[in-house]
Length: 260
Image 1 (cartoon, rainbow, N blue to C red):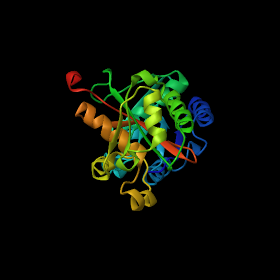
Image 2: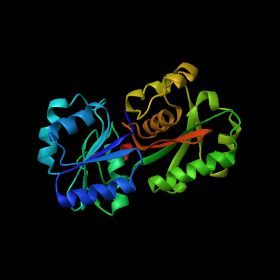
Image 3: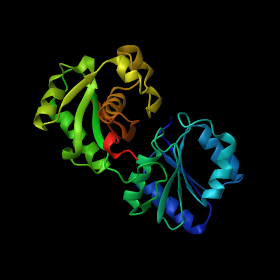
Image 4: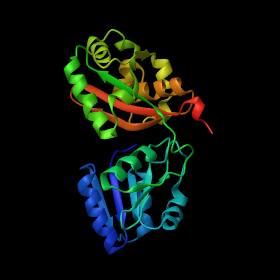
């Protein structure tokens, strides 16, 4: 799935909100105001796998996207917002595509109200971190990346249940030292185990798959660890973030005691 964001607005107030969003969000984003034809613009972006923020009525969004929906594992995340920017509604691919987590981030940046319609929106999840790195990456570099990711997700390290990676990193000294420094359990998982959450990945690297047998270490490890901890379907809270030497992702899932 492409990480590109496409914002679409229809009213003057919506245009102002779209401009504000474009300034706040990823630099790789675009903003279309009153595109003609509207359906072709929105459906084209959706087919390309772009993340959509539609500043319009929910009904308009549903009727426009209905003809191009595939399934929850393939469709990109879609958020709908009112023109005043008061509410953020994850409309499509809430869990699997990460719209819920993305919606939380957008709502936080705007000071808006997140409106979740999926199950268990107000329960306390288990958070897990997945990390990958080049051999010999120092603890200080890994810690700086992790702290940056926690800040983006608005989490404290005390909310994290574990640090995770692939079995090949079982002896990676920087990751071991980081877990010790933060008093976090350090778990590593086999490539076969990590491949079981492949449909939930936000990004995939063919090179990494050829090298270590999985399409993404950080996202896979975070997702698989969350699933094991909660025995429930996980979702990405923060998609893979990377530096020249390491990657990091955060996942969450809900514990058995909190299932409704």
